[in-house]
Every structure is written in C-alpha cells, then in structure tokens.
Image (cartoon, rainbow, N blue to C red):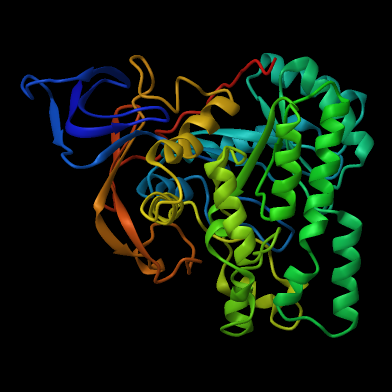
Length: 461
C-alpha cells in the first residue's frame, strides 16, 4: 500500500523544507515531489508540519505503586492517549516486582501487559537489588535480549547504595547499556517528610518542601561522579526539575564527561509549586509527584537548557490515579499516591509553549521529542528520523489551530488534566505508526495490539 502526504513542511532535527512524503506499507519510501496520482491514499497536509513520530521515553502504564494503588492507564488506554496526542512510541519504566525478584521477573510480566499497545513500545528494566547474579543477568539482557536500559532509584522502597550504582555503571560500560536514575537524596527527603508530619504540616505544599532542590541536585552530582569513576559510563538523569541539577549536568558536559543525558518533563517546564496551594488541598493533591513541581526560575532554567543542548529529551512520567485515591492524602500528603497524567498533552503543550512562544526552534522540538530519544535508547534510525527505509512513524501538526485542553476531551482514563483550560497553539492532525493511520484530529483509528515491542542496541563508545 502506498500513502502520500502531499504539500507538507517536512521537519527533522536538522532541516525544514516543503515537500511530499511517500509511504509504502510500513516504511518511508521517498521524500520529493509527486503528482498525487496512482497512490492508495493521499493526504493534503498543506501548511502543516510533517515530523518523525514523537517518542515519550518515560511512562508508567499499569504501574503497581503499592498494594493499594495501581496507575489508571493500561497499555491499551494509555497508548490510545499517546497516539491521539501525537506520540508513536513509548518506553515504559517497569514497576518493582516481588521482594527479591530478579530482572526477568518484572520484564516477563510487562511483556504480557504490553501486547495490548496500539503503538510501538519498549521497556526500561528496574533494579531492586544488586549482586553478582543480577549483574550477570543484566549483561545477558543488554547484550543478547535487546533490553538496553534499566532504572535505578536513589529513593523509595528499593533505594540503591552508591556501591550498587557504581557496580551497575561498570557493567553497563562493559555491555553498552544505559542506566537511568531517579535522583533524590533518600535520607534528606525522608527526614523532612517525617519532620513535617510530626509538626502537623501535612498540606500538599509540604510534599514539595520535603523534597528541596538541593536534594535532587546532590544526588545528580553523586550519580555523575560515580559514572565518571566507572570509566565514563553512560548515565541518563530522568525527570530533571531544578536549576541546581541542571547546573551540575552543565558542569559535567562542559568538562567533557561522555554520554551524560538529561531528561525533563512537561510539568517541570510549565507548572509551578503554586499548584499545591492556590486552589485548596483537593486541587493541590492532583499535582503530587516526585520530584515535585518547582518555581518559575526552574522552569526558565530548563527551557534555556533545552535551547542550549543540556537537556536531551522531554518526556512525561505519565502515571495517573483516581481523584478518590489522590484524596487519600487530604489530611496527610504522604498518604496520596504520587504521579499525574501527561502522555496525551505533552506534544501540544511543548509545541505551544516551546515553538509557538519562541523558546525553542522547530528543529530543536523534533530533536528533543523524537530524534534524541531514538538515538539515546537504541532506536535510531528505525525511529526518530524521516530517511528512506525508516519506520513510517509520522506526526503531523497543524500550527494554525488553537485548542483548550480539557480532561473531558482526553482519551486516557484520568479524571483530570494538569493542564486543564490551558490554551495551546497547534493541534495534532495525523499520526501514523509504521504506515498505519492511528489517529486523526482527536479521533483514534488504530487497533488493540498493533504496537510492536522494540529490540534495542547501541554503541556508547
């Protein structure tokens, strides 16, 4: 089957030009000028931006956060939301498994869960412990099974020690794998949380105050130093939220440390800690997440760092819960589950707040939303590009349309949007995954189980 996108403005990370794009079956066949005849389907995308399919490298579908809480979206509803929102690939961070579980335990579970996905997907593995057996298993999964990346937590129930992280870095360096890290100082955040609760300071704002900027920056600094110590092992800092953490990352990159990668998320670019208190506790609990929302100066520092090349990717950390579950924290912020939706809103919010407001260029938008995630996580040029032979993953954005974001118009299961009533300039017109039209103008057209799991490899040397 041949599909032609006619009269579009082709945008990649390094060029912009008006041209047609031809798809044959699942692949990009050509970019050039065609007469619009003898094709199975022709879409006139005059005045619209035709981009490589956009990638969200940080989601949490079906995450079992505790015995009581499980994130709302599964791999079906969550990837429908992603597709309608302009995302063609997700890389999902797996939840912790049973106590003592090895690396395959959770991976095997998620392999079954992911079969519902409507778009292509991959997984980040997760560490619950580190020993010789785990490191041998890690080596095999990275080198032989196409599971390139794993996540380590510096806090929460399975916080790893510095020695644990160092041993993982050494193995990742040998095997060409990538460690992604949730960076917050465990002892400081737990101490402050317990201190505030004892003092009766239990409103949502104290969640943010118990996780100060310096608690993130300190751990980012430690992780960068450990990666450097491990012969410049690759390191990826997830959901960076503070100016102080960015300053540490800048220093490492400017000093020539190799393979340092930085991710931020939509919410840390557009929302502030005022959300925790300006409209009351029930509203504030919607925004409970870790790291928490910061201040405007942090938003501004992150936008500048994207423009200057210090932030490599923009993801979501998508992890919604019901309002009833969020309200479990009404008398004590620590009782509420942490996480918020975002996979459906990301593309429109970042395009509107970034490109349309002049904070970043169109090329930079594609770079951080598609090409960099593909390159970093071993998917390029199959994903993240518009070259002949690449997967026909394509996101078409209409810059001339405005929308008001409302939860009632969203396809995911969340009962609210953190960006409720935000006006965005730019709408998602067409979304193709491997040549199949899966979404058009907020209508889902795909099918359950169409998504493929992605085998990933790359060379960080």
